[in-house]
Length: 161
Image 1 (cartoon, one colour):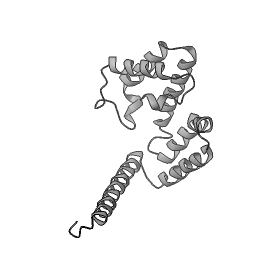
Image 2 (cartoon, helix red, strand yellow):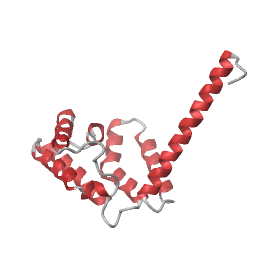
Image 3 (cartoon, one colour):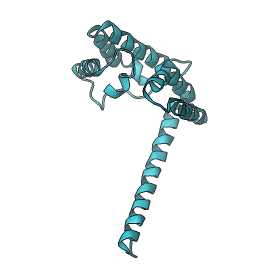
Image 4 (cartoon, one colour):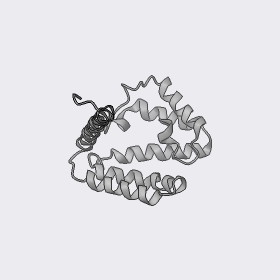
């Protein structure tokens, strides 16, 4: 959670820890944190974010309010289950600025994300898109493992690998 919210203005380690504490106090464990469209509908989650916003500096409060607003927009009827729109919204609502301020290759990174948004446009739901990404990631990991084993076998000059 910390690394994700620190891109917002005024949010550093102290505020990120306060947000985490608010979520923990609300007894939202990792398995109970809502996924996808349910994230904003889950009153405990949003209430905990708002509660944290009341316990931080004015600058950090503004950042948390931006995060809450973005989450609400992402799951609005207009953008729900439109992963391309959701990715673009994240980029346009703070992430591109974060890239520009923190990375020399910000334009390249932003362009990669725009490409990801274009790719996401092929999917009918955010869930389908994320499932496909998870599958691709798993396949890529398997391929890396196979390559690593083959390389190790060659290095050891084994023939029965």
